[in-house]
Structures are given as C-alpha cells and as structure tokens.
Image (spheres, rainbow over the protein chains, first blue to last red):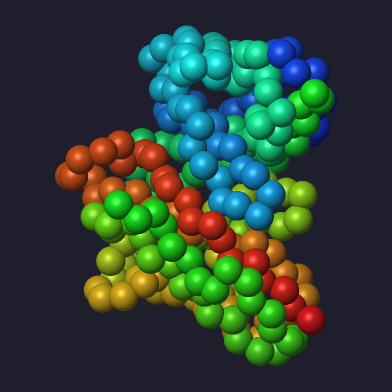
Length: 114
Length: 118
C-alpha cells in the first residue's frame, strides 16, 4: 500500500514531442505528489508538485494531470528538448504527518532525440 | 542560501570498515531525511530525523546502520562493518520546520554520497 508504481521504465521522444510518464498509488492518505528530475551523478531536484484538490497543474512546459478517483497521476513534458533528458521520479507523501517520508516510484529514464 | 550539503561526495571502503556520511541541511531547516538509491533504482527512504530526535527509522536496516542529528553540527549516517551490498548512492534531504515559512512538504536533496565497498 506504500508503493508508487511508475511507467514506462524508459522513454525515447523526438525533440519537440510530448513526453508522458504515468504513476499510480494505493494509499489514499497520500496528499502530496511531487515529481523529481535527476541528472546522472546529481541529487533529485523538485520539478513540480500537486495536491489532490486540483486535477491539473502547469508550470511552463511541465504539466501534472491528477485523477483522484483512479489514484493516478502523470507528468507531461511539452515541446521536449534534449536538455530534458534525465531520469524522472514520481513520488507521494502525507502532509503534516510525523512520518512525512517520500515514497518514490522506480523512475523513468527519458531520452530526447535531436 | 546554500543548498543541502553532503560530504564526502565519493567514499570507498573495504569490507568490514565503517562508513560515515555527513549531511548539512539548508539554513533554517530542522528536518533531515536519508534515502538510499541502488543502481538503476528509485530512492528508498531510510530515516527521518529532527534535531536530537529520530522520528521514523522504518527504512533503516536493523543492524549496522545508525543515524543522528545532533543539536550542533551535521546529520551523520553511520554504516558499520560495510558489505558489498551497501554500495549505493546515499542522499540526504531537508525541509523546513513546520511552524516556519515555506512548504513543509517539499524536501530539498543534496548531491549525494556515492559509497563503494570493495
């Protein structure tokens, strides 16, 4: 019940295309869903995050779509660029909990072809 | 405002030795989290600490691993008698104190310590 399932494991997208990464969770107590971007040899960096009271959040070329009833959320990267090539992790946590650890998905390695 | 700092960035140990990893949270942050990332895998939660207290250690192996966050100084993750399976990247993250400014849900990650056990 603590898992966050992420797919696909790897993704290749042409420059200018749309990259879509999907995640699903089981624990309905989760109420904060961040996405992290990680480049090789670096720590994860927060990209964008959403709470379940909204169905979509957009920041620049990055959009999170959230479906509370299905317990699914996805990251869309519009106009994908080679600089977006990285590993992306979806995640979930419980706000204001004494155990507000982040549960990470397994990651998606995204490659943007020029 | 400096980010989360971790040192060393790379650490090589022989089997049976001790590994000591340090994490200095962002200024004003009093919550520290440690995660472990095995090659080609996601990050797995290990332990959550506040100053001088362990809040959640549900992800820590029962033996050989310990963590502390003293009143003064960095948080320390200690691995005793390391084995090859301990080889991984260890990331520290920090978040603000609940009553302070900022989003307490957001955790900011350091660059990690890559531990190699020979």
